[in-house]
Length: 307
Length: 231
Figure 1: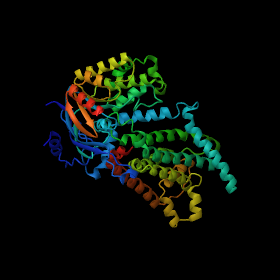
Figure 2: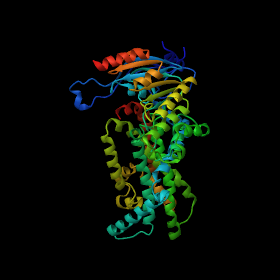
Figure 3: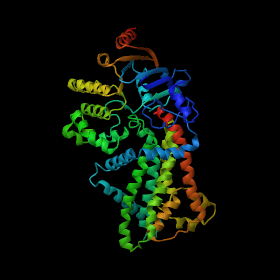
Figure 4: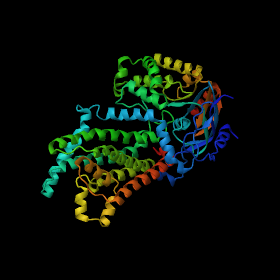
């Protein structure tokens, strides 16, 4: 029996050399297998442990993403503020023309909707494309592939926090109250990005094998814009559909509660999201992460062979 | 025994595209490859295009998992897989060097200590702080070899990179690789440059159709390869 297999059994791990996953404990004095098997229920924890272990690399990748995203633009990072403001301006004009009435705070609501939705959709697509986009990077050295799926969503959170500066003019114009609820904004941004990241983890290995999956994701992201509270609000939906089955279906959209809560935190309003709505939101976050991390950790290494 | 890498019956077959499945096309990849690499060895891998050389390097680097078999290694393994591979075109040479160092598991302080050596060896002078997209292919190759050798991996895997650049840089990079071997590193080189492989390698492997045909001294392996090419 080889040294490597003896080492595996000494760690109490059942060895199956046809299967693989995850790194062994760091030990530079002995030969260690590149791949080893672990129970799938450990994957969600191992993924976090991998990310914490690679935090230096992760921070460099995030800095790289921020540095390169606007590097060749004259306005640089200012685009992160300008973009939601311009979109809010256009949507407000369209909405006023279509509906024929104007809510003085509608533009502010759209800005927050755009920031929240952009964060979610970019987190989904960046982590879903991570394996195909980063194939050149993980050829360099043996690094957990989850790192390359995570730097995009973290970059998006930082840019979204920066984009929040675009709501400052509304505080001045509408004399909005500055409350402690504003501190919840980073939390809801995190929830949006975390959910998008988890969905992306679920999709990334599949998209390596079946490239059409990315087309479906892109379509769902575009369609999801209209099904999410970007141009409409939770109150509009509640007034039209009440709390029937339509409300339950709407809450299956993981962005509805976080975006609504972002608006409430900034505008000082209360949208009366039912407690089961929060339960559904956080339940989906956990379920997406569990499935996403397990599928990514199990399949990502094998899937890259198809790229 | 001072072994830094061991491959035991390693097989990886690429999926056959759907339109070729009915024709029962033999999948490409690597089949039942076994060998060991000792500390300080310079192993050359040769073979025709599509024989599986680069796939084998990627498996040793931990990029691709085997379908079956076991790969074991000791210490840090780094793969230099072509000119400019892995570098971000918008980042400067310096920023790319820091990113590469982090990929190699080095922290900022350790990279700080090596950054001057990287700049000096790569002969990039003021270009080091310019975007990578402005580099010529020679400059890209110089930066690649410079960072790959500066972080002193226990095993460096090189795929067709040492033959690039002008003559003086080729000699310089080959000397750098030899220095790395002397400081306890091991190297595996994939190349079509038989003269360079003969000059640098202590041992060579010939791969044909995903399988090892011969694992021997450079002269014997090169003679066999020439025989195959002529047939």
